[in-house]
Length: 346
Image (tube, rainbow, N blue to C red):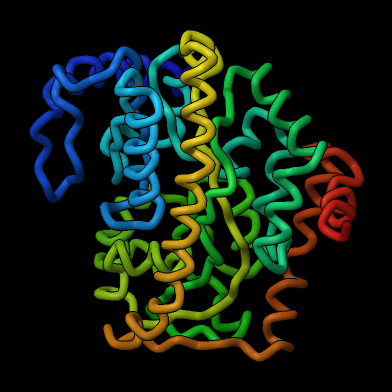
């Protein structure tokens, strides 16, 4: 109830403030379209990513493609850097009928359809082809249909967010080195459970709070793809990177099902098809930036540690219990982990 009340308050503030967003400060991100340039349907596309991040660039591409495909009837306004609020509140607002589209991975969708969370499990994928197999499967379609019944519609998927690595103030070369360190994680059960299993003290924080928290010693480290770590300037306050590759994560874009149903089918089709093209654009940008990130971090004074295979296996084994625990306590369907492995193996 408290979260819903917060969402209601944010929705009210947003309706008052968005009208004046046409001249957003450049440092905060791009501005919304002027009133005269808006289409008949306006979708506010909200992410946590900073300007210049591959996902942010992909969102800009999506907006361009949709404008062209619908002859301007649909406008996508892109709001990076959590400009319109925290993800959980944005999801609530979308469910309440606001014209909000936000980015969400399986760990957030898990709050509504629990089995979605498995795609965020530790060491689940070996490569991105595994992801494509899952999102093209009957299992994924079934989960997506269940999500609609909960009030949320996935309108784009397969946005590669990246292989998640660990950045810390202290050098990490073993599980023992990680013990007791306060590691910033997203505010979701999987990330919290995983880093606690690895021996750290998982500390949920919004991404836009991490730089200050690292500077002030509130946390000892942060995990995310290298592109996100670098684009948020964390290398200025944190000088050790450990290539744990503990998750290979991808994102989806979701809207409220009720709002989605107000958009004519021809425009829905255009948004979805343009989203597929924009996801490919994001993925190409991510691949290019990823190749450059290690060198960029080292140039910024960071030490990048590649774990020996035996140590990497210890990290993996330390958190694989998560799958068993989630199935045993009924959070996930029994046999879910094996079902996903079977899909990947096809």
